[in-house]
Length: 278
Length: 265
Image 1 (cartoon, rainbow over the protein chains, first blue to last red):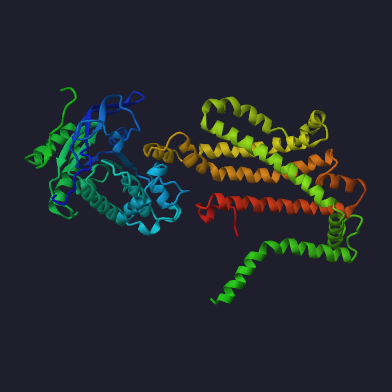
Image 2 (cartoon, chains in turn brown, green; image 1 turned 180 degrees about the horizontal axis):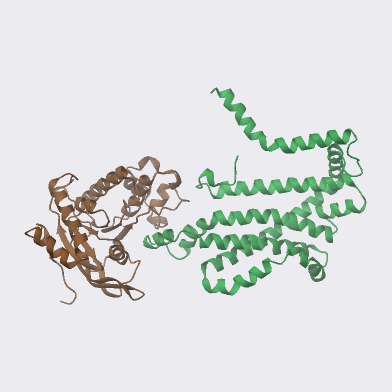
Protein backbone atom coordinates (compact mmCIF):
# COMPACT_ATOMS: atom_id res chain seq x y z
CA UNK A 1 0.00 0.00 0.00
CA UNK A 2 3.04 2.24 0.08
CA UNK A 3 2.49 3.04 -3.59
CA UNK A 4 -0.84 4.59 -2.77
CA UNK A 5 -1.15 8.27 -3.54
CA UNK A 6 -2.81 10.54 -1.08
CA UNK A 7 -6.44 11.30 -1.72
CA UNK A 8 -6.36 14.72 -3.39
CA UNK A 9 -9.05 16.17 -1.21
CA UNK A 10 -9.31 13.72 1.66
CA UNK A 11 -12.91 13.07 0.79
CA UNK A 12 -14.87 10.59 2.78
CA UNK A 13 -18.32 9.28 2.06
CA UNK A 14 -20.85 9.26 4.84
CA UNK A 15 -24.17 7.51 4.49
CA UNK A 16 -26.55 7.76 7.42
CA UNK A 17 -29.85 5.98 7.81
CA UNK A 18 -30.37 6.01 4.06
CA UNK A 19 -33.83 4.93 2.96
CA UNK A 20 -35.19 4.93 -0.57
CA UNK A 21 -38.67 4.01 -1.71
CA UNK A 22 -39.91 3.86 -5.28
CA UNK A 23 -43.69 4.33 -5.30
CA UNK A 24 -43.90 2.94 -1.80
CA UNK A 25 -41.73 -0.08 -2.67
CA UNK A 26 -38.69 -0.09 -0.41
CA UNK A 27 -35.35 -0.36 -2.20
CA UNK A 28 -32.96 0.76 0.49
CA UNK A 29 -33.93 0.29 4.13
CA UNK A 30 -31.51 2.05 6.40
CA UNK A 31 -27.97 2.03 5.08
CA UNK A 32 -25.15 3.27 7.28
CA UNK A 33 -21.74 3.61 5.76
CA UNK A 34 -18.55 5.50 6.40
CA UNK A 35 -15.88 5.23 3.75
CA UNK A 36 -12.58 6.81 4.71
CA UNK A 37 -10.63 8.86 2.14
CA UNK A 38 -8.93 6.89 -0.59
CA UNK A 39 -10.60 3.55 0.15
CA UNK A 40 -11.85 1.20 -2.53
CA UNK A 41 -15.25 -0.11 -1.59
CA UNK A 42 -17.01 -2.70 -3.71
CA UNK A 43 -20.71 -3.37 -3.40
CA UNK A 44 -22.22 -6.69 -4.44
CA UNK A 45 -25.62 -8.27 -4.20
CA UNK A 46 -28.34 -9.85 -6.27
CA UNK A 47 -30.25 -7.86 -8.85
CA UNK A 48 -32.68 -5.56 -7.13
CA UNK A 49 -30.77 -5.52 -3.83
CA UNK A 50 -30.47 -1.74 -4.10
CA UNK A 51 -26.77 -1.48 -4.96
CA UNK A 52 -27.29 0.60 -8.07
CA UNK A 53 -29.77 2.83 -6.26
CA UNK A 54 -27.18 3.47 -3.56
CA UNK A 55 -24.75 4.62 -6.23
CA UNK A 56 -27.37 6.72 -7.99
CA UNK A 57 -28.13 8.52 -4.75
CA UNK A 58 -24.44 9.22 -4.21
CA UNK A 59 -24.33 10.57 -7.80
CA UNK A 60 -27.26 12.86 -7.06
CA UNK A 61 -29.34 11.07 -9.69
CA UNK A 62 -31.87 10.06 -7.05
CA UNK A 63 -32.87 11.75 -3.83
CA UNK A 64 -33.09 9.81 -0.57
CA UNK A 65 -36.55 9.16 0.89
CA UNK A 66 -34.96 9.50 4.32
CA UNK A 67 -31.50 9.78 5.78
CA UNK A 68 -28.55 11.17 3.89
CA UNK A 69 -25.64 10.25 1.67
CA UNK A 70 -22.91 12.83 1.64
CA UNK A 71 -19.40 13.31 0.37
CA UNK A 72 -17.32 15.32 2.80
CA UNK A 73 -13.91 16.88 2.43
CA UNK A 74 -11.21 16.76 5.08
CA UNK A 75 -12.78 19.59 7.06
CA UNK A 76 -16.18 17.96 7.03
CA UNK A 77 -17.69 20.33 4.49
CA UNK A 78 -19.81 19.09 1.64
CA UNK A 79 -17.69 18.00 -1.35
CA UNK A 80 -20.43 16.49 -3.49
CA UNK A 81 -19.28 18.36 -6.55
CA UNK A 82 -16.06 16.39 -6.72
CA UNK A 83 -17.88 13.17 -7.44
CA UNK A 84 -17.78 11.61 -10.90
CA UNK A 85 -19.56 8.58 -12.26
CA UNK A 86 -18.66 5.92 -14.77
CA UNK A 87 -21.73 4.05 -16.00
CA UNK A 88 -22.13 0.57 -17.36
CA UNK A 89 -22.47 2.02 -20.85
CA UNK A 90 -19.76 4.48 -21.88
CA UNK A 91 -22.42 7.13 -22.67
CA UNK A 92 -20.16 9.06 -25.00
CA UNK A 93 -21.66 11.72 -27.25
CA UNK A 94 -21.45 10.13 -30.72
CA UNK A 95 -21.11 13.54 -32.40
CA UNK A 96 -18.01 14.52 -30.47
CA UNK A 97 -14.44 13.40 -30.88
CA UNK A 98 -12.72 11.46 -28.11
CA UNK A 99 -11.01 14.62 -26.90
CA UNK A 100 -14.22 16.66 -26.93
CA UNK A 101 -16.04 13.90 -25.09
CA UNK A 102 -13.46 13.99 -22.34
CA UNK A 103 -13.92 17.74 -22.09
CA UNK A 104 -17.70 17.54 -21.81
CA UNK A 105 -19.07 19.95 -19.25
CA UNK A 106 -15.85 21.95 -19.15
CA UNK A 107 -16.59 25.37 -20.51
CA UNK A 108 -14.48 27.82 -22.45
CA UNK A 109 -11.50 29.00 -20.50
CA UNK A 110 -11.53 26.06 -18.08
CA UNK A 111 -10.92 23.69 -20.93
CA UNK A 112 -7.39 22.38 -20.54
CA UNK A 113 -6.58 20.27 -23.59
CA UNK A 114 -3.10 19.44 -22.41
CA UNK A 115 -4.49 17.95 -19.25
CA UNK A 116 -7.20 16.09 -21.18
CA UNK A 117 -4.55 14.60 -23.46
CA UNK A 118 -2.51 13.50 -20.45
CA UNK A 119 -5.49 11.80 -18.89
CA UNK A 120 -6.35 10.13 -22.20
CA UNK A 121 -2.75 8.94 -22.38
CA UNK A 122 -3.04 7.48 -18.89
CA UNK A 123 -5.94 5.29 -20.07
CA UNK A 124 -4.04 4.33 -23.22
CA UNK A 125 -6.07 6.41 -25.66
CA UNK A 126 -3.50 9.05 -26.58
CA UNK A 127 -3.51 8.18 -30.27
CA UNK A 128 -7.29 8.26 -30.81
CA UNK A 129 -7.95 11.87 -29.78
CA UNK A 130 -9.78 13.01 -32.88
CA UNK A 131 -11.81 9.93 -33.67
CA UNK A 132 -15.52 9.59 -33.13
CA UNK A 133 -16.75 7.04 -30.58
CA UNK A 134 -18.51 5.17 -33.39
CA UNK A 135 -15.23 3.74 -34.65
CA UNK A 136 -13.94 2.61 -31.24
CA UNK A 137 -14.36 -0.81 -29.65
CA UNK A 138 -16.39 -1.29 -26.48
CA UNK A 139 -13.30 -1.42 -24.30
CA UNK A 140 -11.84 1.70 -25.89
CA UNK A 141 -15.10 3.60 -25.38
CA UNK A 142 -15.12 2.66 -21.74
CA UNK A 143 -11.51 3.88 -21.45
CA UNK A 144 -12.63 7.23 -22.81
CA UNK A 145 -15.45 7.23 -20.27
CA UNK A 146 -12.89 6.70 -17.50
CA UNK A 147 -10.81 9.56 -18.86
CA UNK A 148 -13.90 11.78 -18.95
CA UNK A 149 -14.43 11.13 -15.25
CA UNK A 150 -10.76 11.48 -14.29
CA UNK A 151 -10.15 14.73 -16.13
CA UNK A 152 -12.09 16.44 -13.34
CA UNK A 153 -9.63 15.03 -10.77
CA UNK A 154 -12.52 13.61 -8.78
CA UNK A 155 -12.15 12.96 -5.10
CA UNK A 156 -14.72 10.21 -5.30
CA UNK A 157 -15.23 7.98 -8.31
CA UNK A 158 -18.45 6.01 -8.53
CA UNK A 159 -18.37 2.99 -10.80
CA UNK A 160 -21.72 1.47 -11.76
CA UNK A 161 -20.82 -1.93 -13.21
CA UNK A 162 -18.39 -0.30 -15.64
CA UNK A 163 -17.02 -3.65 -16.82
CA UNK A 164 -20.42 -5.28 -17.20
CA UNK A 165 -20.70 -4.86 -20.94
CA UNK A 166 -17.12 -5.85 -21.77
CA UNK A 167 -15.91 -9.22 -22.99
CA UNK A 168 -13.92 -11.36 -20.57
CA UNK A 169 -10.42 -10.34 -21.64
CA UNK A 170 -11.22 -6.64 -22.09
CA UNK A 171 -12.79 -6.82 -18.69
CA UNK A 172 -9.60 -8.03 -17.01
CA UNK A 173 -7.68 -5.29 -18.78
CA UNK A 174 -10.15 -2.64 -17.65
CA UNK A 175 -10.09 -3.90 -14.06
CA UNK A 176 -6.32 -3.59 -13.99
CA UNK A 177 -6.56 -0.14 -15.49
CA UNK A 178 -8.96 1.04 -12.80
CA UNK A 179 -6.77 -0.35 -10.06
CA UNK A 180 -3.71 1.36 -11.51
CA UNK A 181 -5.53 4.67 -11.84
CA UNK A 182 -6.81 4.37 -8.31
CA UNK A 183 -3.32 3.64 -6.98
CA UNK A 184 -1.90 6.60 -8.90
CA UNK A 185 -4.57 9.13 -8.13
CA UNK A 186 -5.83 8.19 -4.72
CA UNK A 187 -9.50 8.92 -5.21
CA UNK A 188 -12.10 7.19 -3.08
CA UNK A 189 -13.71 4.51 -5.22
CA UNK A 190 -17.07 2.82 -4.93
CA UNK A 191 -17.62 0.01 -7.40
CA UNK A 192 -20.99 -1.64 -7.80
CA UNK A 193 -20.76 -5.02 -9.47
CA UNK A 194 -22.49 -8.36 -9.75
CA UNK A 195 -19.16 -10.11 -10.19
CA UNK A 196 -18.12 -11.27 -6.72
CA UNK A 197 -14.62 -12.23 -7.84
CA UNK A 198 -14.11 -8.76 -9.26
CA UNK A 199 -15.34 -7.24 -6.00
CA UNK A 200 -12.76 -9.23 -4.01
CA UNK A 201 -9.98 -8.46 -6.50
CA UNK A 202 -10.48 -4.72 -6.35
CA UNK A 203 -12.07 -3.84 -3.02
CA UNK A 204 -10.46 -2.91 0.28
CA UNK A 205 -13.81 -3.89 1.60
CA UNK A 206 -16.68 -5.78 0.00
CA UNK A 207 -20.12 -4.73 1.02
CA UNK A 208 -22.91 -7.24 0.59
CA UNK A 209 -26.35 -5.77 0.13
CA UNK A 210 -29.50 -7.82 0.45
CA UNK A 211 -33.02 -6.49 0.12
CA UNK A 212 -31.97 -2.95 0.78
CA UNK A 213 -29.85 -3.69 3.83
CA UNK A 214 -26.18 -4.29 4.45
CA UNK A 215 -26.01 -8.04 4.98
CA UNK A 216 -22.25 -8.34 5.53
CA UNK A 217 -18.92 -6.61 5.16
CA UNK A 218 -15.76 -8.40 4.17
CA UNK A 219 -12.38 -6.75 4.64
CA UNK A 220 -9.93 -7.76 1.96
CA UNK A 221 -6.49 -7.14 3.33
CA UNK A 222 -4.37 -8.56 0.54
CA UNK A 223 -1.49 -7.01 -1.40
CA UNK A 224 -2.18 -5.57 -4.84
CA UNK A 225 -2.36 -6.39 -7.63
CA UNK A 226 -4.29 -9.45 -6.56
CA UNK A 227 -4.46 -12.55 -8.62
CA UNK A 228 -7.62 -14.42 -9.28
CA UNK A 229 -6.10 -17.77 -8.37
CA UNK A 230 -4.68 -16.53 -5.06
CA UNK A 231 -6.10 -18.91 -2.40
CA UNK A 232 -7.21 -16.09 -0.15
CA UNK A 233 -9.02 -14.38 -3.05
CA UNK A 234 -10.74 -17.64 -3.89
CA UNK A 235 -11.68 -18.23 -0.26
CA UNK A 236 -13.11 -14.75 0.19
CA UNK A 237 -15.00 -15.01 -3.12
CA UNK A 238 -16.54 -18.21 -1.83
CA UNK A 239 -17.41 -16.58 1.47
CA UNK A 240 -19.12 -13.64 -0.24
CA UNK A 241 -21.04 -16.00 -2.52
CA UNK A 242 -22.13 -17.98 0.51
CA UNK A 243 -23.25 -14.72 2.04
CA UNK A 244 -25.32 -13.89 -1.05
CA UNK A 245 -27.04 -17.22 -1.40
CA UNK A 246 -27.49 -17.72 2.29
CA UNK A 247 -28.56 -14.27 3.28
CA UNK A 248 -32.03 -14.35 1.76
CA UNK A 249 -32.77 -17.33 3.98
CA UNK A 250 -31.86 -16.74 7.59
CA UNK A 251 -31.87 -20.41 8.59
CA UNK A 252 -29.60 -21.48 5.77
CA UNK A 253 -27.28 -18.65 6.58
CA UNK A 254 -26.83 -19.55 10.21
CA UNK A 255 -26.35 -23.18 9.22
CA UNK A 256 -23.63 -22.17 6.83
CA UNK A 257 -21.95 -19.92 9.36
CA UNK A 258 -22.04 -22.83 11.75
CA UNK A 259 -20.54 -25.14 9.19
CA UNK A 260 -17.71 -22.75 8.61
CA UNK A 261 -16.97 -22.95 12.30
CA UNK A 262 -15.57 -19.55 12.95
CA UNK A 263 -16.79 -16.47 11.16
CA UNK A 264 -14.80 -15.96 8.00
CA UNK A 265 -11.72 -14.01 8.91
CA UNK A 266 -12.11 -10.50 7.67
CA UNK A 267 -15.86 -10.47 8.04
CA UNK A 268 -16.63 -7.44 10.05
CA UNK A 269 -19.77 -6.26 11.45
CA UNK A 270 -20.12 -2.55 11.25
CA UNK A 271 -16.78 -0.94 12.01
CA UNK A 272 -15.87 2.66 11.83
CA UNK A 273 -19.41 3.58 10.93
CA UNK A 274 -21.27 6.45 12.41
CA UNK A 275 -24.83 5.48 12.92
CA UNK A 276 -27.50 8.02 12.15
CA UNK A 277 -29.69 7.12 15.06
CA UNK A 278 -26.69 7.60 17.31
CA UNK B 1 -5.98 -6.68 -57.77
CA UNK B 2 -4.32 -3.97 -59.84
CA UNK B 3 -4.82 -0.27 -59.30
CA UNK B 4 -6.21 -0.05 -62.82
CA UNK B 5 -8.79 -2.68 -61.99
CA UNK B 6 -9.97 -0.89 -58.87
CA UNK B 7 -10.15 2.37 -60.82
CA UNK B 8 -12.34 0.79 -63.44
CA UNK B 9 -14.56 -0.62 -60.74
CA UNK B 10 -14.73 2.75 -59.08
CA UNK B 11 -15.75 4.30 -62.38
CA UNK B 12 -18.52 1.75 -62.84
CA UNK B 13 -19.72 2.41 -59.32
CA UNK B 14 -19.73 6.18 -59.85
CA UNK B 15 -21.43 5.95 -63.22
CA UNK B 16 -24.00 3.30 -62.42
CA UNK B 17 -26.71 5.71 -61.18
CA UNK B 18 -26.59 7.30 -64.65
CA UNK B 19 -27.05 4.12 -66.66
CA UNK B 20 -30.83 3.99 -66.37
CA UNK B 21 -31.64 7.65 -67.16
CA UNK B 22 -29.13 7.90 -70.00
CA UNK B 23 -30.36 4.62 -71.47
CA UNK B 24 -33.95 5.78 -71.26
CA UNK B 25 -33.18 9.01 -73.08
CA UNK B 26 -31.29 7.13 -75.81
CA UNK B 27 -34.15 4.70 -76.38
CA UNK B 28 -36.60 7.59 -76.40
CA UNK B 29 -34.54 9.51 -78.96
CA UNK B 30 -34.19 6.45 -81.19
CA UNK B 31 -37.88 5.66 -81.07
CA UNK B 32 -38.79 9.28 -81.81
CA UNK B 33 -36.36 9.44 -84.75
CA UNK B 34 -37.70 6.17 -86.10
CA UNK B 35 -41.18 7.67 -86.04
CA UNK B 36 -42.50 5.26 -83.43
CA UNK B 37 -43.49 8.14 -81.16
CA UNK B 38 -45.55 10.90 -82.81
CA UNK B 39 -43.99 14.32 -81.96
CA UNK B 40 -47.49 15.60 -81.22
CA UNK B 41 -47.67 13.29 -78.22
CA UNK B 42 -44.05 13.23 -77.15
CA UNK B 43 -41.22 15.33 -78.60
CA UNK B 44 -37.78 13.80 -79.06
CA UNK B 45 -35.20 14.54 -76.35
CA UNK B 46 -33.14 16.59 -78.76
CA UNK B 47 -36.12 18.84 -79.49
CA UNK B 48 -36.63 19.30 -75.77
CA UNK B 49 -33.01 20.35 -75.38
CA UNK B 50 -33.46 22.72 -78.30
CA UNK B 51 -36.53 24.24 -76.66
CA UNK B 52 -34.51 24.61 -73.49
CA UNK B 53 -31.68 26.37 -75.30
CA UNK B 54 -34.11 28.69 -77.06
CA UNK B 55 -35.97 29.53 -73.88
CA UNK B 56 -32.69 30.19 -72.12
CA UNK B 57 -31.45 32.44 -74.92
CA UNK B 58 -34.60 34.50 -74.77
CA UNK B 59 -33.90 34.95 -71.12
CA UNK B 60 -37.31 33.96 -69.88
CA UNK B 61 -36.49 30.45 -68.65
CA UNK B 62 -33.76 31.57 -66.26
CA UNK B 63 -36.02 34.29 -64.90
CA UNK B 64 -38.90 31.89 -64.33
CA UNK B 65 -36.61 29.38 -62.70
CA UNK B 66 -35.14 32.04 -60.44
CA UNK B 67 -38.64 33.17 -59.43
CA UNK B 68 -39.62 29.59 -58.58
CA UNK B 69 -36.39 28.96 -56.72
CA UNK B 70 -36.83 32.12 -54.68
CA UNK B 71 -40.39 31.20 -53.73
CA UNK B 72 -39.40 27.68 -52.79
CA UNK B 73 -36.38 28.83 -50.78
CA UNK B 74 -38.26 31.50 -48.87
CA UNK B 75 -41.15 29.13 -48.19
CA UNK B 76 -38.79 26.37 -47.17
CA UNK B 77 -36.82 28.61 -44.84
CA UNK B 78 -39.92 29.94 -43.10
CA UNK B 79 -41.67 26.58 -42.97
CA UNK B 80 -38.64 24.66 -41.77
CA UNK B 81 -37.99 27.27 -39.08
CA UNK B 82 -41.58 27.04 -37.85
CA UNK B 83 -41.48 23.25 -37.96
CA UNK B 84 -38.20 23.17 -36.09
CA UNK B 85 -39.41 25.48 -33.34
CA UNK B 86 -42.72 23.63 -32.98
CA UNK B 87 -40.96 20.26 -32.95
CA UNK B 88 -38.45 21.38 -30.33
CA UNK B 89 -41.23 22.90 -28.22
CA UNK B 90 -43.48 19.86 -28.25
CA UNK B 91 -40.54 17.48 -27.99
CA UNK B 92 -39.20 19.16 -24.88
CA UNK B 93 -42.41 20.04 -23.08
CA UNK B 94 -45.27 17.67 -22.32
CA UNK B 95 -47.80 20.50 -21.74
CA UNK B 96 -46.94 22.06 -25.11
CA UNK B 97 -47.22 18.67 -26.72
CA UNK B 98 -50.71 18.23 -25.29
CA UNK B 99 -51.64 21.71 -26.43
CA UNK B 100 -50.20 21.71 -29.94
CA UNK B 101 -49.78 18.18 -31.22
CA UNK B 102 -53.47 17.46 -31.75
CA UNK B 103 -54.23 20.54 -33.86
CA UNK B 104 -50.99 20.09 -35.80
CA UNK B 105 -51.85 16.49 -36.63
CA UNK B 106 -55.24 17.67 -37.91
CA UNK B 107 -53.68 20.37 -40.05
CA UNK B 108 -51.17 17.88 -41.36
CA UNK B 109 -53.97 15.80 -42.81
CA UNK B 110 -55.12 18.73 -44.94
CA UNK B 111 -53.48 18.69 -48.38
CA UNK B 112 -51.95 22.09 -49.02
CA UNK B 113 -53.41 22.08 -52.50
CA UNK B 114 -56.94 21.84 -51.09
CA UNK B 115 -56.52 25.30 -49.61
CA UNK B 116 -55.18 26.84 -52.83
CA UNK B 117 -58.53 28.51 -53.72
CA UNK B 118 -58.71 29.94 -50.22
CA UNK B 119 -55.14 31.17 -50.44
CA UNK B 120 -55.82 32.87 -53.78
CA UNK B 121 -58.83 34.52 -52.18
CA UNK B 122 -56.78 35.73 -49.23
CA UNK B 123 -53.54 36.73 -50.88
CA UNK B 124 -54.48 37.09 -54.56
CA UNK B 125 -52.12 35.78 -57.19
CA UNK B 126 -49.06 37.47 -55.69
CA UNK B 127 -46.00 36.02 -54.05
CA UNK B 128 -47.42 35.74 -50.53
CA UNK B 129 -49.92 33.07 -51.49
CA UNK B 130 -47.30 30.87 -53.17
CA UNK B 131 -44.92 31.15 -50.26
CA UNK B 132 -47.78 30.46 -47.86
CA UNK B 133 -48.59 27.19 -49.59
CA UNK B 134 -44.96 26.08 -49.50
CA UNK B 135 -44.74 26.99 -45.82
CA UNK B 136 -47.89 25.03 -45.04
CA UNK B 137 -46.47 21.99 -46.75
CA UNK B 138 -42.95 21.91 -45.34
CA UNK B 139 -43.85 22.71 -41.73
CA UNK B 140 -45.14 19.21 -41.08
CA UNK B 141 -42.32 16.93 -42.17
CA UNK B 142 -39.86 19.14 -40.29
CA UNK B 143 -42.13 19.34 -37.26
CA UNK B 144 -42.79 15.60 -37.05
CA UNK B 145 -39.18 14.58 -37.50
CA UNK B 146 -37.86 17.19 -35.08
CA UNK B 147 -40.34 16.06 -32.46
CA UNK B 148 -39.41 12.44 -33.03
CA UNK B 149 -35.70 13.31 -32.98
CA UNK B 150 -35.89 15.18 -29.70
CA UNK B 151 -37.89 12.41 -28.09
CA UNK B 152 -35.52 9.71 -29.23
CA UNK B 153 -32.36 11.31 -27.80
CA UNK B 154 -30.84 8.66 -25.53
CA UNK B 155 -31.95 9.47 -21.95
CA UNK B 156 -28.68 7.93 -20.76
CA UNK B 157 -26.80 10.71 -22.52
CA UNK B 158 -28.99 13.36 -20.93
CA UNK B 159 -28.39 11.79 -17.53
CA UNK B 160 -24.64 11.69 -18.18
CA UNK B 161 -24.71 15.33 -19.20
CA UNK B 162 -26.42 16.19 -15.92
CA UNK B 163 -23.77 14.36 -13.90
CA UNK B 164 -21.02 16.18 -15.78
CA UNK B 165 -22.58 19.57 -15.24
CA UNK B 166 -24.03 20.20 -18.69
CA UNK B 167 -27.36 21.90 -18.11
CA UNK B 168 -29.68 24.60 -19.37
CA UNK B 169 -28.91 25.98 -22.79
CA UNK B 170 -25.72 23.94 -23.12
CA UNK B 171 -27.74 20.75 -22.70
CA UNK B 172 -29.86 21.68 -25.73
CA UNK B 173 -26.91 22.83 -27.78
CA UNK B 174 -24.51 20.04 -26.92
CA UNK B 175 -26.76 17.03 -26.42
CA UNK B 176 -30.38 17.37 -27.49
CA UNK B 177 -30.00 19.25 -30.77
CA UNK B 178 -27.12 17.15 -32.10
CA UNK B 179 -28.95 14.03 -30.95
CA UNK B 180 -32.06 15.06 -32.84
CA UNK B 181 -30.12 16.26 -35.89
CA UNK B 182 -30.22 13.04 -37.96
CA UNK B 183 -33.99 13.00 -37.63
CA UNK B 184 -34.31 16.74 -38.33
CA UNK B 185 -32.33 16.28 -41.53
CA UNK B 186 -34.65 13.51 -42.65
CA UNK B 187 -37.51 15.96 -42.18
CA UNK B 188 -35.66 18.64 -44.09
CA UNK B 189 -35.03 16.24 -46.92
CA UNK B 190 -38.73 15.49 -47.24
CA UNK B 191 -39.45 19.20 -47.01
CA UNK B 192 -36.99 20.02 -49.79
CA UNK B 193 -38.67 17.62 -52.19
CA UNK B 194 -42.17 18.61 -51.21
CA UNK B 195 -41.54 22.34 -51.46
CA UNK B 196 -40.80 22.11 -55.20
CA UNK B 197 -43.67 19.79 -55.80
CA UNK B 198 -46.34 21.84 -54.13
CA UNK B 199 -45.06 25.17 -55.37
CA UNK B 200 -45.00 24.24 -59.02
CA UNK B 201 -48.49 22.85 -58.78
CA UNK B 202 -49.55 26.05 -57.05
CA UNK B 203 -47.99 28.01 -59.90
CA UNK B 204 -49.95 26.12 -62.52
CA UNK B 205 -53.16 27.14 -60.78
CA UNK B 206 -52.61 30.84 -60.76
CA UNK B 207 -49.42 32.65 -61.53
CA UNK B 208 -47.80 34.86 -64.12
CA UNK B 209 -44.26 33.61 -63.59
CA UNK B 210 -42.33 30.57 -62.48
CA UNK B 211 -41.73 27.07 -63.72
CA UNK B 212 -45.34 26.06 -63.04
CA UNK B 213 -46.52 28.98 -65.13
CA UNK B 214 -44.39 27.81 -68.06
CA UNK B 215 -45.89 24.35 -67.73
CA UNK B 216 -49.43 25.71 -67.63
CA UNK B 217 -48.70 27.97 -70.59
CA UNK B 218 -47.16 25.17 -72.62
CA UNK B 219 -50.20 23.02 -71.95
CA UNK B 220 -52.49 25.83 -73.04
CA UNK B 221 -50.70 26.29 -76.37
CA UNK B 222 -49.86 22.63 -76.92
CA UNK B 223 -46.09 23.33 -76.84
CA UNK B 224 -45.15 19.76 -76.09
CA UNK B 225 -41.41 20.44 -76.15
CA UNK B 226 -41.77 23.17 -73.52
CA UNK B 227 -44.04 20.98 -71.42
CA UNK B 228 -41.57 18.10 -71.43
CA UNK B 229 -38.78 20.57 -70.74
CA UNK B 230 -40.49 21.69 -67.53
CA UNK B 231 -40.94 18.05 -66.51
CA UNK B 232 -37.25 17.36 -67.09
CA UNK B 233 -36.28 20.48 -65.15
CA UNK B 234 -38.54 19.33 -62.38
CA UNK B 235 -36.71 15.99 -62.21
CA UNK B 236 -33.33 17.72 -62.24
CA UNK B 237 -34.37 20.07 -59.47
CA UNK B 238 -35.54 17.11 -57.43
CA UNK B 239 -32.15 15.53 -57.91
CA UNK B 240 -30.54 18.83 -56.93
CA UNK B 241 -32.57 18.93 -53.72
CA UNK B 242 -31.41 15.42 -52.96
CA UNK B 243 -27.76 16.32 -53.52
CA UNK B 244 -28.18 19.31 -51.25
CA UNK B 245 -29.71 17.16 -48.51
CA UNK B 246 -26.83 14.68 -48.72
CA UNK B 247 -24.32 17.49 -48.64
CA UNK B 248 -25.97 18.85 -45.48
CA UNK B 249 -25.92 15.41 -43.95
CA UNK B 250 -22.23 14.97 -44.62
CA UNK B 251 -21.47 18.39 -43.20
CA UNK B 252 -23.70 18.22 -40.15
CA UNK B 253 -23.31 14.54 -39.26
CA UNK B 254 -19.66 13.73 -39.91
CA UNK B 255 -19.75 11.41 -36.91
CA UNK B 256 -22.37 9.08 -38.31
CA UNK B 257 -21.09 5.67 -39.36
CA UNK B 258 -21.21 5.45 -43.14
CA UNK B 259 -23.69 2.58 -43.07
CA UNK B 260 -26.32 4.79 -41.46
CA UNK B 261 -26.12 7.49 -44.08
CA UNK B 262 -28.58 8.00 -46.91
CA UNK B 263 -25.67 8.65 -49.16
CA UNK B 264 -24.47 5.55 -50.95
CA UNK B 265 -21.73 7.26 -52.96
